[in-house]
Length: 251
Image (cartoon, rainbow, N blue to C red; front, top):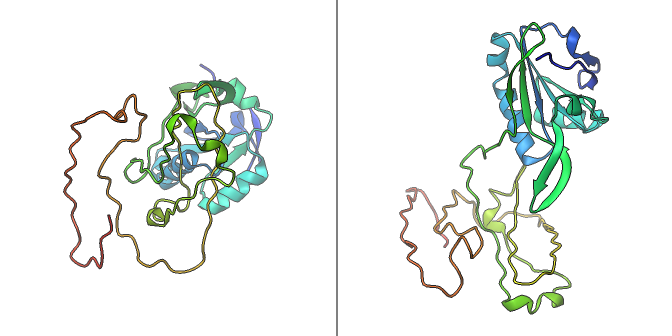
C-alpha cells in the first residue's frame, strides 16, 4: 500500500513533504495530544531509542492535531531529537485512518487512534500498529489515593465545596506527568460530573518517601471487586522489604 503523501509544518521550522523525505525507512506515529501521560511515555520512548533507529536508517515523525506552537513547547520540554508535525486540519490523520470514532465510558466521539506506520524506501507501508497501548514506565500499577462512600446517594447534594483528601504520601506518584482515573458506582440513573483540583503547599514535607507498596488491589467496582457487606477471602498478608537505612515507616 502506497503511503499517502502530506505536507505539514514541523518543529524544525520547515515544511515536511513525505514524498520528498530521503530516508531508508520512515516511522510515523499518530498520537492523541501533547503533554498527556500516555503520549509523553510513547514520545520519550522513541526519543530514547532514536540512535538505534538512526543506525537502521530510519527517520521518525510524530503527528497530532495540536498546533505547531504546542509542539514546539512540548518538544523543548522533552528535549526531542526528532520532528513533530502539526496537522490541525487532520489531513494526514484522515488519510491514514488515524482519525476515527472512539468509545470511552459509554460515550462515542471522534478522536485520534494511537497508530504507528512503518514506510519503506519505495514509499510503501509495510507495517501498521493500530490502537497502540502505553504502559507506565516503572510498574504500570494503579494506586488508590482517595475513596468516598455514601449510602444510596444520600449526602452528595451537600458537597458544595467538595471532598478533601491529603495525598502528600503519594507525592512521588503525583509529579511530572501522571494519569488519574475514577470509578463511580451508584444505583440511580443520575449522571456524575467530577472535577479534581490539587493544592500545592510550599515547604518541605515531614519525610521523604522511599517507596509505596500496595497491600490490597481492589480498584474495580463492587461488582467485579469485593461487594460491600459480603465476606471475602482476600489474603491480607504481604511481605514488604524495608531498607536498613529507613528512618520511619507509615501504614
